[in-house]
Image 1 (spheres, rainbow, N blue to C red):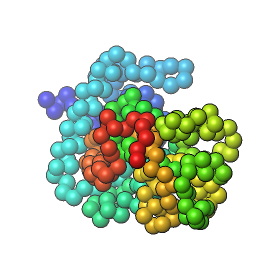
Image 2 (tube, rainbow, N blue to C red):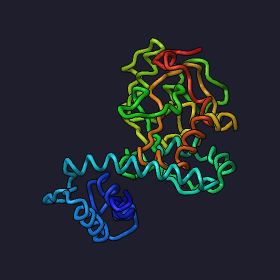
Image 3 (cartoon, rainbow, N blue to C red):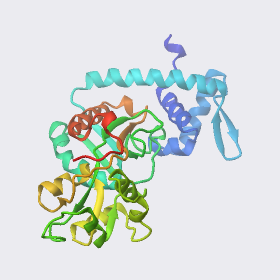
Amino acid sequence: MSARLPPLNALKAFEVAGRHENFSQAAKELGVSHSAISRHVRGLEHQLGVALFRDLPRGVELTAAGRAYLDKASAGLELIAQATEELAGPVRGRIVVSCEPRFARSVLVPLLSEFYARHPEVDVRLESSRTLVDVEHYEADIALRFAKQGQLDVPSDLVSNLPMYVYAAPSLRPEGWTEVSQLMEYRRFRDRNADVWRLWAETQGLDGELWSLTGWRLQAELAYEACLCGQGVYLGGSDCAQRDVAAGRLIRCFDHALYDGAICLIMGSQAERKKAARLFRSWLLEATENLRVPVEKAKHQPIG
């Protein structure tokens, strides 16, 4: 049996190269040279007597035999990784988490202290980006992204689906807010590209076209800061605003809410092998339990 086992380094090089279908990306992930990956893969093909990749004008792709072998090799390496973790004691390692900028700043970063207290040996590399990363090709272990319809077209976990409200700095209108029409006197900011002001107005039975925004656009992070500085009113997720509301830096102008999408967690199949990634996912879903409401309630509807 042992005589039929290929060298572990060659098997790992093949698994990563097969997952990316790119030798350069495999070399980057493993921290070795492109030629080292090529040498391992060609040696493995020679030992097996089977072509695992075919050359293309710009790169390589798996053969049918290579794809079948990849599925079984990946499963085998996952079993080895899990068995090793069970013997390794305390969780260690680094994970890469890609997160939407607003959610990262206002929700995830403040919560991380709790995770570090529980798992001090895990290093979380947090990357703030709106760009959708490919967790299957190891651009990140975990990604937190906004889903317009409340769910993504890939397997994911619901993290937050709290509604949006209108917020303002207390100094913007010290006398308080009594009529929704008062909002029209100020610059109106928003935290999404969609015309959420129109949607918000329509849930209150107002003329959506009147509230539709055609100008004064800022990126979500800048729009939020502008609101904190008293430069206008802001329609955004209550998950990201709750800390500033609790601290008195923002007030909720009205109780009218808009349910419009959710933040979801995506984890790559390769990250599933990492105990540190699985722990982070479990911890985050526990830590954000108060940010989720029943799905049947999370629709465009007024509250209050």
